[in-house]
Image (cartoon, rainbow over all chains, first blue to last red; front, side, top):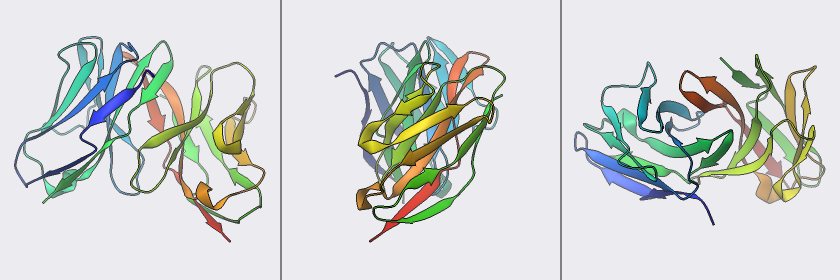
Length: 110
Length: 115
């Protein structure tokens, strides 16, 4: 089945230690998004790629970066995670109004 | 920009009674609308979506939603609640951004089901 895959599902990192979350998709969608969902809050868009074009939301901290080496993969890099970055990170995709949403990676910062 | 308002942050029902989760949206064009469910410590699961076809949309697990353009509403209903329905529900609207579209999430409604 075509889907959005996120690995790992749970990630533990240390305060200040860089961490990378990954997302892959088999939907052949041209747009990929990263959302941050903190406890008891709605998912918040961090940035997205429209094909190879990177689009950052205005209030996304510089600590968050993203890479999209090809159509199928997209990475979220957190350069120096703080305790406040502990959250569920959701990857989503879209093409022509059709969307896919991944299961999320829960990040714990110790 | 589009926005979505979930009118209730918490809804409590008894098992076997109807469920109503309310959602209003603002849109300058005909949007796509979705309902997602999230169980504790789980990812999001698509319940149903509206994409300008039939205004009454049937989803999984007995849920359905009706798109009412005149009221800018997309309320989620289920005739009879089950204990397993207890979860967080998000109403979501697609938004046209400068570089395509994105999903805009409501703040969520927590559904509690008592026996």
